[in-house]
Image (cartoon, rainbow, N blue to C red; front, side, top):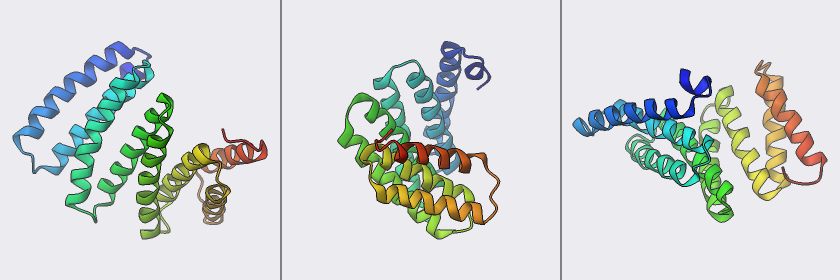
Length: 190
């Protein structure tokens, strides 16, 4: 993480890959250990994040999909585990981002829709959870980017209104509000 923050992408990638090897060994040693499996999925994401920053879309997609497979299994194994469900939502989002950059818009849209379904369920399960609400805002923003659908924009605005009424002091609320105003005010999707 330190190397990544310092801009040393090669060093960060080497460190993340070394950690991935260890986590693969630990995960193989006890496939039923949900924490070890989650850690392994996080390692795949970290490798994917660096590859994406390096412009290796194919490598990033492969890493994100490897993490997605693990997260699908964990989420299916414990549907009531909000963290496992959120992790799965994030994986769909990351896969969608790469597919969008690669020009696979139908694949990206399918991934974003899968993310949205999970984010909606998590936010509905705990209406007072600001983090779940912000995750849902992110999911709707991806749909606005892909489709320009005013329904998703309206849903974003309603969630942001509710967060402001609840007194949530998170800078992302204002950032999303400004983004939404710019995206819809321009009459085009960002």
